[in-house]
Image (cartoon, rainbow, N blue to C red; front, top):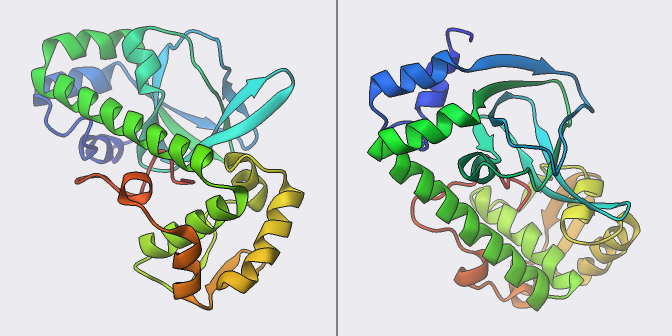
Length: 243
């Protein structure tokens, strides 16, 4: 691996409390790989052979069924994906493909499972990360099931304004086609919904989001900390950036 790789990975909550010798052993068994844009790295249903750590670029996680697919998340540096399948030695539930040129560190799943049993602090970190992912999925499911499409789109736009420090204007972090897929809509429905939200205090100019009336937008969304909030210690980076 490149000399700058270890410190970046060591800083991740998943690895930062490990015994140094154990971390070194895990990284020694790992390796860097560069993937071109648009490449399918893993396919759902295949065995989970590696934990993937995104160091550069971005990866889309996709669910597929009966010829259909939906965006589940977009992963950006520096963060991991598909930890649960690696720990359980289970098949991948999602397909992963690169959105751009992407550098990945691959950690063998068998070594990960072995270290889970040997290093108590690493085991605690794994449990905490999986618990955080579970709670994120529950929040997402609640929003999908309890809100209509206009409310879901408005909640997404308001949430990312808050993540941006309460900014009245910001740039969408993902393409609209990915956002539509994530929110369970077609691109055409998303475009119509964005247009309809102008009366609720939102204007869209290309990829630029402009909040013209925060009070109206908030009234539509009715923010709920049990849906829209973040747990203590959570971040807005890494897996689920699209959420």
